[in-house]
Image (tube, rainbow, N blue to C red; front, top):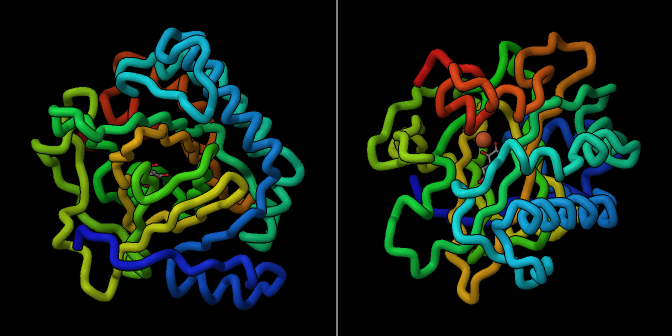
Length: 284
Ligand SMILES: O=C(O)CCC(=O)C(=O)O
Ligand SMILES: [Fe+2]
């Protein structure tokens, strides 16, 4: 199943009801919470990303968050960008941690590895690989050893059907780990990447997507199948977002929990998936 057929359910009304939150998460493998994060903090992270893109020469020096564009995300020095976006301050701000603790129902540890995303519109671009962001996958395939973490995904500016975001397969976490196969047609940085064949997701696992606003939070399970929705906006707008993982504070801490993304990616002995996921890999 490749096509989005519905929207996420807004779980914001469930906040404060432990049992209802857990029941929804166990059934659907995600939680969609609107307006729960401090918008000023989100705005600061967006401005840091803008500043980084300008400082690295990827964006026009007069660009604002409203008219920002870049030629290609693959052309930007991602390691250098990690120096501009102070995401640890965002994730570990007491107001953010409070939301995470409400979501998990216990003290949390926020991963040191964060992925930052600045995807320009691929509308009108001839090369089809330009629109290739992330194929259908489970974060639990790359990240561990413990699988009790949850991915937390936030837009830094509003997203919509045109500018994309994440589509996830409702309830797909329940079948556990799935096979990820190399796909020659799906390339990042010129390398084929692994993904779950769309046919491996059943009709009882509908693909969902919703436009999101700054302050919204999407949380999903390590085995929830999900993929990027490409940015094909016209008029062109950027997709700016970032994602990390949180886990119970008491759980063992694996590589991504303890290692900043930029450290994993700097090591040239690690492969392309390390650059994409921050996980040293034996599975390329
Ligand atoms: O933001 C995207 O395009 C993909 C997100 C993703 O795979 C994740 O947050 O784990
Ligand atoms: Fe992912």
